[in-house]
Length: 416
Image 1 (tube, rainbow, N blue to C red):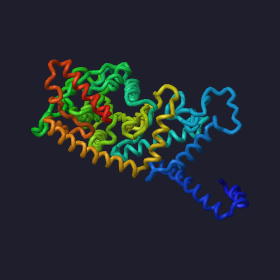
Image 2 (image 1 turned 120 degrees about the vertical axis):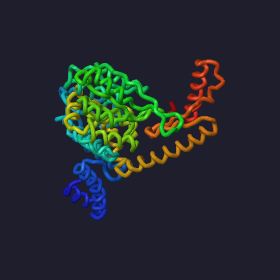
Image 3 (image 1 turned 60 degrees about the horizontal axis):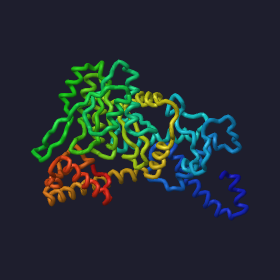
Image 4 (image 1 turned 135 degrees about the horizontal axis):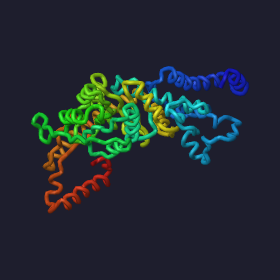
């Protein structure tokens, strides 16, 4: 409401009441001004009304929502269902243009502004988590695996004769398939089992000697990149990303880090940060849903080089859905810096509690919790007593599958 509208409103309602209402409106407008000026997460999370007011304003800036717009000849932002329109807050133009997923759209000023703010907030929240060497970040409208493929394809464009990607093994399909989907050949590097301080169990670590051997054997001209992994299932430890970064710098080979759900773990973040500062890291990919509590569908790719992120954005074919970006944008506004810090701190306490309770449970059952200090995200417990009466491998598998089903039916859905 502008000054003239306020003056006219005061003819209908006492001016003091109008002023009180205007002060409330101005306080919400001030939040937007601060967001545009600082381009980072707000210190404290916004309430629903403030977020919805901003989204309504942004959608009103898109051409499909102009009053009197006929849409003659229009090919996009034509939404049949009012439910679908409301679900997207009437932001129907998506993100980017045909040649750049981060480009501004002439017909969608509001959507474009939301995208630019979301990318700035992505960089800010990664730095807040500890990745201070990050110079640029981009929210991609595809999940982790496809984002890794896009990064590899962008690297391949600059080094077309290289065909191999060295990949320290992790038993997860999407990162392996991301290499194949990019038309590249994975060189699978088995991990090495190491005992730690004489503790029972040991952990699987990166075979750095084997990696150097692969680089020597195939030559840096034929190897496009090393794809390392941080977050993973125990007893596998995080890859030795700092040492890998130094190897990649020495051999002049690109280094892509699959940091799928590692942003929430301080030790993981620290290793990635050090590797950026001491060696070569071209890009780091992290999942939106696993780190920022939004629906599956997006990822953040970041880099200590703005040029790498610009090339990834320009490599994306066509425009894309705004849904992952919008989900992230809303969540960061409502979470705020203080809320995000609290979540990181709470995760540490809950992880410590879970470790203690699993240790006690394992002792009661005659099992043991494996000691994997280089993995603070997952825990591994032996299950030997659960199938000791099994006559063969098939029966053993059946009994362990039954255990998994029993856990799932009791609300434990994250066990592997």
